[in-house]
Length: 561
Ligand code: 87F
Image (cartoon, rainbow, N blue to C red; front, side):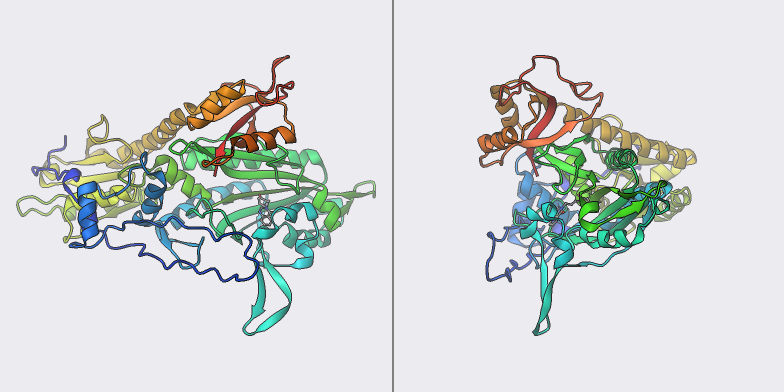
């Protein structure tokens, strides 16, 4: 234990609700504008119920009794409320008066910037260039590739009016940019020397969802990158699909410390306009639901045919290009919150945390260690860490501990008068439970920068390991229907031998439909040593768990977001 000479304030004695400002005030229920032909009921949003009221507020007192740590909901008791409350209290999200739209506050936007920086650098190394295409799509372009829009049509938002006058032609807001970009591809690509054409854009898209919205996970407007590329050969396209998928895996596992399973989507679940869809699938153990992390599609030549994207090859023959498209969205942030967050708040992996270390003075007997805190902060900032000191004198150290724990800052440094005497600081890790070994340690000031670097690295690894252990314990192998249902109802993912037939997947969906939602294939996993199957080949004679027909593949099934 560090010795500051002061009684360390116990976090358990505090009531965060008393001091946290009222955030995320109840946004007015959005009044859906669309009066005519409302396709389905507007989604009900799960807004936080309690917002840490002001002192004297009856609700705040209730909260105090309910939980001394400030979060009114427990992750394992009431996951939905825990999540929607946490993203607001953790200052990631502010609610907005258009249903399904959310404000990304600097705390979450900064995480998006970290993801963006990593991915952007990697795709530039591959020779992919950034670009920007317009937000609007003409109806003609949007509906050119029928398979692609068919199932999605109800989600397309249209602009029909400017001021008081009707537009001559309604204009769609991009739900994705295949139909925005490919007419231009056909103009830019003439000969084999124009290939490959590889572009990416960082932008927003709009999909007018009717399922109930959840911050980051399902919103009507979201941020993403969309990559669109064209090649002379299928082989080149195939290689890129997997290179991008590997980058997506790295975003989840190396940055967000969230384990994912790479695989290919079934015919039912793939992007209808394309040839095949690969995916990184994440899993939320607390709800037993899979979540599609990002997708990398090989589009084949469907769009090339529709949009007439031809090139002349070396032999002067006219050929169609092979295309890919791939996307990663701000959903990443929601998955990270759901996987790592706990009953005290967010837990942010060091690589993406906007602030990696917070430095808090612990005054005692009139001695104020603020100057030492400033010095330590500067020293660590110069060493390249993202550090903030919290020298506010109107909050107690214990209140600050709770506040920064709620925000998920990976490390806090406490400095008291006795620490200064001993030329040391106390470092406390956010990811470990109170009183567990390694949670807090005294570090000599002399090695501080080196040690902080090591602790952050250790924490980054530990978060992934812990999440992977839990993740892997949620994969169950089932070879028959009863075992499949038992696993599913125990909130597991199910790896099952499957005949790979569309009708069978549809029938599994129908048979599992219920309050918790139907099960579907998450993916057919590629080889991965952490799975109970090493390669995706099936022993002779193995039967499909659902149809009893000869199985062709191992498929990973589950309920999902
Ligand atoms: C909603 C409305 C209209 C998904 C939609 O995955 C069209 C669509 O095409 C639509 N929702 N999609 C599929 C998007 C495919 C693809 N686009 C580039 C991606 C990644 C990035």
